[in-house]
Length: 409
Ligand SMILES: *Cc1c(COP(=O)(O)O)cnc(C)c1O
Image (cartoon, rainbow, N blue to C red):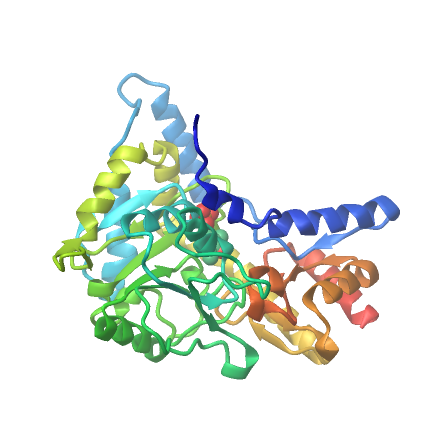
């Protein structure tokens, strides 16, 4: 008899976006003629840039020849891409890394979910609240999160509220924690941490022997000089942080699948007998066992982002989304809503008017403005009273959505 890993039964049944889809479909069934605009789910809309498309075509043609065919590649990624990452994303910012501290992946979701395999189930974890659900759910699956209470909080998870009251800057935990998940610029709130604010966290981790999992998926959207693109811009971070990157939001790779994870050689964790073990060789061992590499085509596509054409084209698309974000923020503020984020990230975090619940405001937006947003409470208890809007829409649809919200409001 095969016995279940019954931690899976603790997972909430419904995935947030499935709940939303159900409500939207119910609305559409009742109002078949109404055109609904989605500013909800976090997928991009603009196509891949020409430099990436050319690289994909070239790589495809290579694969059609005996000499150019690529089968299994290195589990850690091809050197051509790791070198491009090293040079452009790190050396250019004064950060020194070794090539074998870079692990190319098939997107940051897999690695942010998988990396927790390397630490014991009984570590304590802290998360900012609201949060990208993958961090908690992957810990639930291994039994680390405990049980979910009626208040929506997991018993073994320390929640660090990020709300308008604290300016969306999490306070350092008052109790001991072993592992901290940080995502900046943040999904869902769209807010960022300055270098000084992130330094507090790195210093905390050093003082308290904690490990930081840092998700930098929205790094390319940063507009302000005092916002760090990588946690390794902070002195000492190489000893305490693992960092996850993704080309999904940077270059529209949500369907191509490629990103990378940085595991510095200095990051160590303790054994029960107090020895220190570096994570880098263990992650390498794990990847060689469970991962057979990101496709050659995806890695050639990612390499093209770092050419001068690629960089310009990718920057133009990010500009396009960030212009949406600015316009959304201005318009929504001008009609009296409290709006946060959107300055260094493609998300706006909007406070619901008159203390309305997230889901209630979601329904008002759907039924009155025919615009789909994401209820903030779906990202954690501190998201109650907020909704998330994305700037990933096309210009035309975003404008149209703003017009509708303005006239309904
Ligand atoms: C979109 C997103 C990612 C990227 O996931 P991929 O698997 O690379 O597509 C990672 N982290 C956060 C917080 C995200 O919103």
